[in-house]
Structure formats: C-alpha cells, structure tokens
Image (cartoon, rainbow, N blue to C red; front, side, top):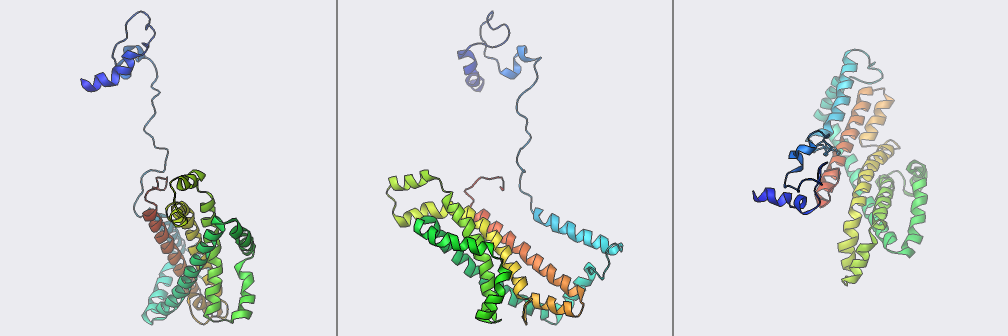
Length: 304
C-alpha cells in the first residue's frame, strides 16, 4: 500500500487527467490501470536493446572459423585448385613435418624476437613523443611535422636507405619494425591527449595539482583510450613490417621460410607461413583488447 501511494502522489497532487477530468476529482489510479486510457495505444518504450547486446565468449573465433570452413569446403569439392592454394590438410601435414624437425619453432622464435623488439622500441618512442608534443606547443612544433612526414612515406621506401646505413643484419630489421610501430602510437596517443576535456585541466589547477600529479591523474587516464587504439594498429604494423624485412636478404624467420618456398614452388609452406602470421596477428590483437578492457574497466561503452 505504501508503494502504491508513493507512486500515485504526483497524480493526485497535480492536475487530473482524462477526458472527463473537469467533472470528477482526481483519483490515485496507476496510468496503466486507468479505464480512460484503455482504448489508447501503448506508446511506452519497448524492451528492445539498441546496443550490440551482451558480450559472447569466443565470439571472435566465429569469423576465422567460417573462413577455414569455407577453405575446407572449397578444397574438398574441387572448387579451389591446389596449385593455387594448398588444401588445409596438406598445410597441417606440412606444419607437423616442420615442427617435428624443429625448423618451424626456430624460425618462429626469431620472427617473434624481431617483432617484439621493434614493438617495444616503437611503443616507447611513440608514447614519449606524443607526451612531449601533446603537453607542449614547442614540442608539437618540433615533433608533429616530422612525424607527419614519416607517416606519408611508406616504410618499404625507407628500406634501401636503411640497408645502406645499417646493412642487412638485425639492426636494420628491428629499426624498420620500430618505424612502422611508433607512428600509430604517436598519432592516437597525441589525439587522446588533445581530446582531454579542458574542464579537467581547470579542475587540476583549482585543486593545486603539480605537473607530476597532473600527468599522473589527468593526462595518462585521458590518453589511455587513444593509446590502446594506437597499440592495436601498432601490433598489426609490427607483423606487416616483419613480413617485408624477412623477405629481403634474410636468412632466418618465417618470411625467409616463405621466400625460400617460393623459389622451389612449395605452395603449402607459403600458405603455412601466411597462416602463422595470421594466427600471431589475431592472438596479439586479442591480447591488446583484453588488456584494454582491464585497464579501462571504469569506462562504460558499447564495447562492453
């Protein structure tokens, strides 16, 4: 009774409603029980969600699984010529043979080391440059222009110059990956910094935060969404750059294995190398997204 009276209070205290409101006193009747509204259409909001709905476990595997299933069906029915693209079972058998003699693990470890070093240095360089450029007008005038120039120059165009400077050893390869990584980190982190609401800056000044506290409590949390977006692009850029450098005067790595297979017409090894790159890219992107959800758990977005 208490709940009904409480919810009905606004109806009795205000003007009565209904077609005959002027001839009868207001009564404490719920709107959905009022006989005067019985013939009117229900215009209350429905329960249909406008967002993407709750997160589903392993939903990210649906798309890749569908591609593999399409590959299997096309190969099994003969729609796909094995001379163009090897059958999935042939690729799996090739992987088993390369794992048995240790070649796949050896090349994979070398490739992962190169990509990891390039990714690490690229993240550090991109984040530091973004902080300097985003927090200082002088830093922006000195840094942003050269970074935009590098952004317009493809990484592949710099390889001949890097070979002349550093040779064809590991330094050139890691540096090429670094150059492909730091640009998206810089761009997205810088955009995140400049997108911080000015009211937070004014609030930090009002409460007397110092430079260190301002960076720790305002700048870094505000830049994290942009940083993680840039990190996703950077991880992809690391693998793309790795494919390029390992097919140019290289003697080890997954790319070298693929280039050697091209020389001998071994399509199955080439497809295996592509599959390895694809799996590494999918796993690394999923890792970044998981880290992003943990670090930005305070955000409520459509991503869930």
